[in-house]
Structure formats: C-alpha cells, structure tokens
Length: 289
Image (cartoon, rainbow, N blue to C red):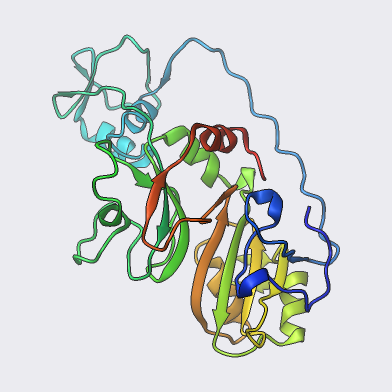
C-alpha cells in the first residue's frame, strides 16, 4: 500500500508517476483515501475437470481470429466448423487435436505477442475506424505479423500506457473487475482543484452508475493544483474524466502513467516496444497489484 502523505507532497519533476516499487525513479506517493478498506483477496475460482478442452470462442480468440464476443457471433452465424461439421452452439468445447475452420480457413494457434505503447493523442483505441481516424494499430504498424488487440480502451485524446496483445486469456484477466488492476493517471484540469473537492474524491462521490472513490490522490508539483495524480482500480467507462466533470472541472489532458504494473518509463510518446519475458510473467502472476 502507498504510504500516507500530506496534500502538498508532489510528484517529482512535475508529473504523476507510480511509486518506486513499480519500477520508476519517482519517490512520489499518492494520498490514500480516508478509511480505505483493505483490498480483499480475490474470490476463489471454481475448479473444473481438466480434460484438455477449451471453449470454441476461446480457441478462436487465442488464435488471434477475433475476440471471444465476436467469436460467439461468428459461431451463431454458422461460419465455424469443427472436424468438418458446422457448429452453432455457444459453449461448445474443443480438444487440441480438433480441426477448427473459420470461413473454411484452418485456425492455427499464433505465437503470443505483447506490445506496450505510449499512446499519443488523437488516436482511437480500436483495430480499425469507419471514420478513417488514426488508430493504435496504425501507430504500431509493422510491430508483428500477428493480429493484436488493445487491452481495454483509452479515449481518443487520452495518452499513455496501453497494452496490445493476442493473448485472450490474459486480456480477460486484466479487464475483469474482480481482479481490480491498478491504474494511475495524471489529470490536468481547467482550474485548480479545490481542497474540498480533493477530499470528496478520496471519500467518494456518487455518479449515475454508482458510487466511486479514488484509491489515492496527489497534487502535482509546480502546477498550482491544476494537475493531480489519481490512482484508481475501477475500469468503468471514462471514470476519471467523469469524476472531475461531476465536480465541475474539465479535464484538459489525461495521461495514464501506470497500468497493472506497466509504466511508460523510457518510452517516448507514440513509441512502442515488446514486453520482456519477465514482464509477461509478472502480468500473468498479478505482480504489483
């Protein structure tokens, strides 16, 4: 857990960064919310018989054909065959030895790819865009031959840490609310954040889709309280922007500096790199949560 600090302690160098244990050089700490309850242990996962089979939609997702949700649509549409037979029943399980066809093309397992992007502004977090706007896939063009997908979404003008991968199982783990992956953002506002509103964000406010509070909050040095670092675990849509908008602030800039243990340290805006084997292992083990 982050140590308590007073409201005036700020991020080193004028930008919100995670604590040093997360792999950055910053010694900044975010102010934890008052009376924050300890993070509870994850609920035990129900055990199932390990017969070597997986769901058909997961098979397609793991092969990089599409997401699991898209796979369900394709299965019901009758374009997926298993051992020469059209399969339309959701929940169908397949063995590694089964021959799976998608649009009469053999589905083969792809090498797993993990790409970390420091997302630039004015790019959409989708595989393609019907309006012809720049996408994150355009930014990493040429990074790999495999078809990868962004893990979660960042708004068009939100910048910072974004993971792209064809590992459907890891994606589900990183996005599922039960696993509560930590995220840290630096938000630049249109006016100074009042002390009263600072405390409200830590104590909790009520939005149209339910209550929300930051896990930690900190003013950023030398920004006249117009820039703050905010730590949050919620994956709700546009949650950081909505928190400030609810209190009457406009978020001029929003930069994600930390996601599930990954940072943009030494990665310039608009650049990408492949994760190391150690980073992938830590992600799968849930390190730095």
